Image (cartoon, rainbow, N blue to C red):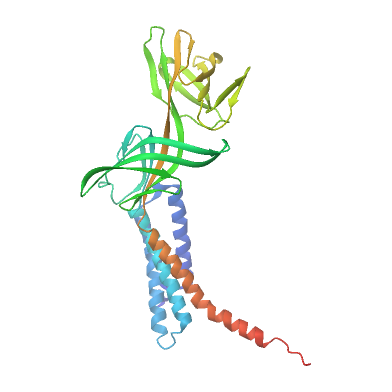
Length: 345
């Protein structure tokens, strides 16, 4: 009997709730810490609240007024949220996809896809083939971004076979398929640099993931030639004597400011200047060309069946609190009105 009282005590429930919140925060920051054994904590919390509800129903057979039903709705809402948040880590799917223009990517392509949550369906993910056709960024007054539009072809396999769908995905306008939400996360531009030796042989030829921040510098290495390249992106470059900058964030006249340094001589610049798309620079019997620039978008793919459970749980909690305490508020208002002094004329 004492053990049952302990299980249904408010202090035990508050302790379990605090531990559960701590686990949820830890899992969000460090997903690898997740283990099914931790589900014991929310399971105990679910049991404690369930026994508390059963105990209240048994003890209040005669007096089941509106406040009783409000309290019951509140506790049922807590049960729904505990169940939904606990099961979420077992049934939720969450992945981030880097999608370069013109490249087809599936959810199993580890070169472009990072899967963060997929514990239940790791062997049976849906076949979704994504390809970025075009990307457009719209600006107000040529300075302030107001809209990002990714034109994407989505290939899916369902009961009708393989089919392609084309949709424009914007921020706050995802594409929905079979419970999966495909959302726009962010975007950028990836340059292709080609380095050749004096005989025209290709030493390096690749697209590079570099920062598109106009105010910051990035760096990458060409190990084959022992070079370090410091870069800065100018989407709409201008030159005034020795000064260079970008007129706007719009990609109308793209260029990269580049400083080339040899790994064995880090304090001497092998070459320094600005390359527009299609331009090249010669130094130390080598040629560096800014050959191409392609946009890419980062897409988020999410499936969370627990969303509506959490939403329903919060609705029950709010309604339960209103039903539970509204009569008390009205009673206090009535007492306050009755205690107001009256004046005799």
